[in-house]
Image 1 (spheres, rainbow, N blue to C red):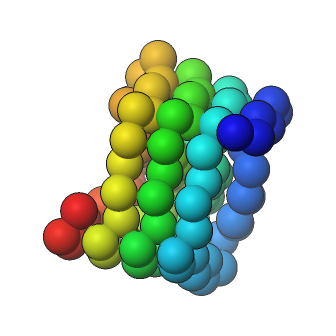
Image 2 (spheres, one colour):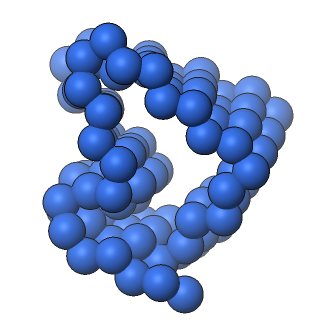
Length: 99
């Protein structure tokens, strides 16, 4: 299990499209969104497994004015002080299909 300590792993800003598929992401630890920090961006993930990641806000993603779509993704043992899997601030949209 790898461990990443920091603010976030992937940062995307306004009007950016982020695509993720078939990844196994485990053991990341960060302050906000251990995997994704999205500010006005759009994220689509399909078929990834996220396990045992942790954050202060949103163990998978910190979302500010963003859209997130997860299809056939798996979430195991992730934790956060606030937001659990996702911390959504201001206007955010979360779509989950077959998870």
